[in-house]
Image (cartoon, rainbow over all chains, first blue to last red; front, side, top):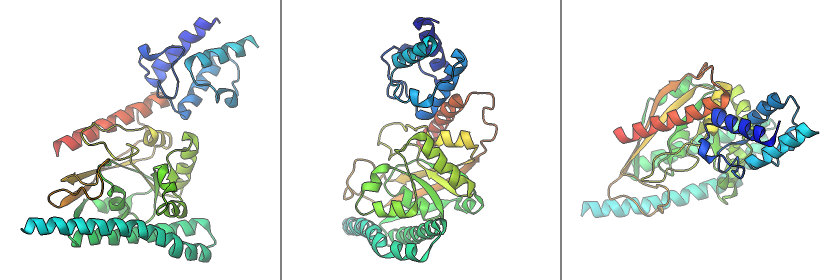
Amino acid sequence: MTREDIYNKLSEYLVEMFEVPPEQISPDAQLYEDLDLDSIDAVDLVVKLQDLTGKKIPPEEFRTVRSVGDVVDRVHALLAA
Amino acid sequence: MFEKINYVWRLIGTGIAFACFSLGGALMTLFVFPPIALLTKDDETRIRRVRRVIYHAFRFFVFMLRIGGIIDSRFHGAEKLSQLRGALIVANHPALLDTVFLMSRMPDVQCIVKHELWDNPYLGGVMRAAGYIRNDGDAMSMMTQCEKALAKGQNILIFPEGTRSVPGQPIRFQRGFANIATHFETPIQLVTILCDPPTLAKGSPWYAIPPRQSRFDISFDELLDMSGYLRHEPRSIKVRRLTRELEQYYIGKLCHE
């Protein structure tokens, strides 16, 4: 899975699950401030990403994640590991 | 002439009421809650007793405002409360006194309160003693606290706006209440608060009282059953839809009445 694949999949999730307007999504967009997610949403997102990657994502690893780009980096690193 | 006297009377009365409110909070923290804590070993019982004191104080306060001719208030359908267990009580928030009016009808209610009040020198002690839930915590820990209250059959009072409405701007709800309601399938008791003429709104000082006496109409409307709400949608969608639906409901309520 390339970075771009991950980014596209993530964008899809953000639109479908959290009703984020597609035009607001960019690598710099902040999940909590710009895209209006909360910490419960973050847990849902982690679960969804686990399904996608087939890897277990430890919650503490996700706690420092702030932007869409961060999520892509984190998932990419996880798949490479 | 009469109008002028009435205005001055209400101005003085409002000032006294404000002073009594803050002072009352501080005095209770100093002289009422400590003996309760001393005499009650069990935490749950202590909190229940503290809330009972708050309830009686608010009841008296609301009564005084009314017979003193400072602010009038009418409750509609408040008898529904006696049957209500483990529900979310949701209300719009036009004025400073909304909480006081609502809690003057609820002897043991859990409440989600703006975190600033914990740092308030007069009311901070009351918040701590009554075991209310802060609104600035992590969404997860808030859910755990709500779960506890609901399991005990307590109702939870929440103003989804998070703070008082901004006059002239459409109502905006935060999602906290919807997180609770969809996750625990908690029934929602809708309450509409109307205040005419507006008083004690956000951004106006206590002495900016209206030219004639304000009257609050507090209506206990529908009870929403949340079991099976949008059963096939993901949690995050349910929460967002519910938030928007109730936002629209209140916007409609407030412009038609």
